[in-house]
Length: 276
Ligand SMILES: [Zn+2]
Image 1 (cartoon, rainbow, N blue to C red):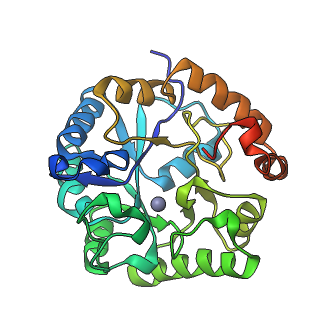
Image 2 (cartoon, rainbow, N blue to C red):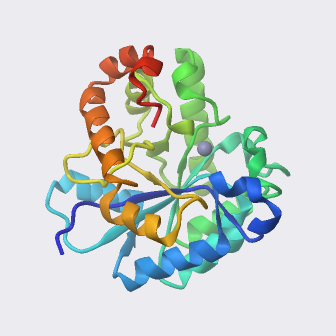
């Protein structure tokens, strides 16, 4: 089978009681679906890699041999500690977690993520355990704000404070970033590089290949709207449908220059590309 590229999956929370939290399906994946998805990846021979493995693969710029998958989680929910870790460790899978550091240890979820139900934020002690178990802990900013709406000083504070907090607490380097809400502009990309990030993760569809932009790594969002069939399509092709692939590729081509993207996004309603 021809390997098209590496799927980078984007999850948020794992819901052990989806029936009680029906509104969480846009952001969470039920524990049962997550089990089935990880089992499928394992059976299909996928090897889980971390963000630093991915960086090496991109730098080498060689065709990738074998099936690899990068599993990422955003925000930092407790269910990763209780559910995701247990399911993934069965198959020797590890994840890359993008944390919003201002919320660590808070009793309730992010104020704008009410739909995650009662899944509280991870504590530093739990994050430390995940890190010791092979998870890579990286930055999702400090306050989970829209990065493309910030002035330069606030932006710098967001991307440096979160980096430093994780590095100081875990003693490991933080050099990958995931944009909250998938939003970024040219200044965000420039300043991330300026303060020492070497990779940034978007929510643009598609599979990662050696020519992918390191500061806009494509990620495929998985939530509980996905069936096993759509999950397999997304992992195998990077897109939900051929129509999605066509539109995404046109957008990627036009957005290749971030300054052009900034200009066009002022007119986004006219173009209808959306933020992803
Ligand atoms: Zn987020």
